[in-house]
Length: 112
Picture (cartoon, rainbow, N blue to C red):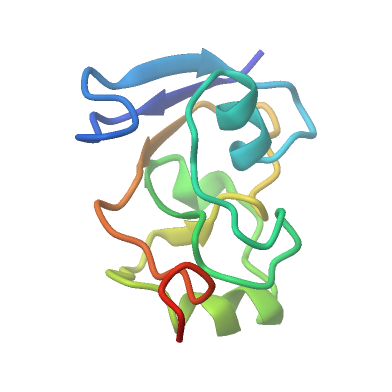
């Protein structure tokens, strides 16, 4: 099983976390299944940016983001070249190192 290494995040995993993912599940699903409460306001339907993550290692082994994901990433906070929406990245054989950004934009909870 591929391993997902989450770098330390002040609120979600202060010590970091290493979890096993099932091939074919999203990073978001794997994280939630293992108790890492990544925000996912749109219920993982690629309709928001709350599950934005940075893939610090393994990014080049992933399929490219589709146009819809790219459009939402344009609206996310703190995007960089290795940004993805964790609900859209499907785990295959590769191990990944993931950083969860400190902030997220949640249009629902922020009453925009």
